[in-house]
Length: 150
Image (cartoon, rainbow, N blue to C red):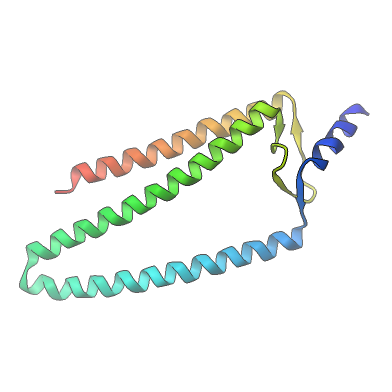
């Protein structure tokens, strides 16, 4: 009986998102991502067409510019991976410290269970470790790629 009461108290510390709100938010994020992604593909395609023309006259210069483009794209990807990894690590740390997963104050989807106690600590520390690993692997991949490129 007490576990239900403590779960109810923990849920009241969270901001509950209705499933219909989640769908609308997800569609909005997807729409923004598609627009931004399409714009980036359009810009890169134009740049690659210019490089294709440059390749006929100066192949060495075209290869250097493709290398620079690859470095910019990979660096942008690592910035995203480190940002997501940092947030996930912070979230996991908060959950582990509060022994409540998701941590107090977090948004939860309607009907999602809230874990407390040792299970919440294990989930939080697991998320923290995996997030640090993800960010570290992204940095290592970009470092190795930059080291391999001329």
